[in-house]
Length: 389
Figure 1 (cartoon, rainbow, N blue to C red):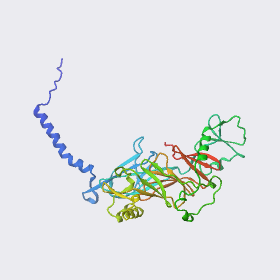
Figure 2: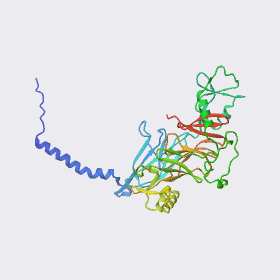
Figure 3: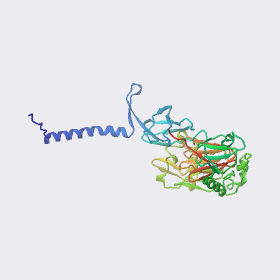
C-alpha cells in the first residue's frame, strides 16, 4: 500500500522571506495605485510617452433603455437594473454628452471635465408622442373606458396629437345599463373643480403694470377660464420654486455642504466660466458678486463657486402653471402658452426643455405625483415615460 503524502508546513525562515516579498511588492505597487486612482495616466500618443491627467463623468439616465454618446462615441449599456454610467479616464476639456432613444426626446449637454474630478449630470427623456390614459365617467365590466360619440372615428378628435396608453371603447349609443360608474372620474373631476387651474399668468400679481409684455393667444373651452389667485410656492426637499417679477427661479434653501452639484461651477474667472458653462451663468455670478442681496448669495465649496438661485428657461413664453416634475427635485413642470413642458434646473451649458403635450386648449392639475389633463371636457392622465424593454 502506497504511503500517503505528508505535507509539511513552511519553516519560520521561509515564512519570513515570503512575508517580506509581499511587503516589497506592496510598497512598489502603492505609488502606481495612487498614481492611477488620482487620475494620472501614461499617454503614448505621437510616439512620445507622457503623463496626462484625467477626470470622470457620472451620468444618471433614469432609464436603462437609452443610448449614451460622449463626443459621438457610444458607450455600452450598464449592468441590468442600473441606469447610471460611470466613465473613467476622460480627457480634460469640454465633452458633448448625448442621451437618446427611439420614441424619446434627445437630451444633450456640453460640460467640462477637470483633473481628478468626476463631473456629475442627470439626463431625462420623455416621449415624443404624448401618451394619455383615458379617464371616463363610465366603463365596462372589464374596466375599459367608454366614450359616447355621435359618429365612429371620433377617437382622433378626442386624443388629437396624442396616443392612448390603454384600450378605449367608442359608442354611438347612450345606453348605460351595461356600464359602471368610474370612481376615478369623480375624483379627478373634484380635483379640477377645487383647483385654480387656468391659463392666467403666474406673473400677473407680481408686476401688473407690465402685463402688456406678453402677447395672449385666443383661447376657448377649458382654457377660457380665469382666476386671480396668486400662484403658490412649491418646495421639494431643500429646493424651492418661486416666481419673481417675470421670471421663475429654483432656490436652494438647505445647508451649503448639501447643495446639488448643478448649483456650482469650477472656474477661476468670469471669462473661464462663460467659456466652460455659458455666458448666462457668468453674467449671473458677476451680478451676484456685485450685490449684497441674500437671495443672490454666492459661496465657495471645495474650490467651486456655488449659487443659491437658478433662473428657469420658460422659452420666452407666459407661464400658467408650474410645479416639480413627478418624483423629481431636479426637473420642473411648466404649462406655457403653446403646451406643457418639462425643464431641468441644471443650467450648465443650457437647460434642456422637452415638450410633454402641445396645444392651448387644456388645463393641468397635479395630484399625488400624477399629472391630470382636462381638454374639451375630457379627463386624462399624462404618462411621462415609455415602458422599458
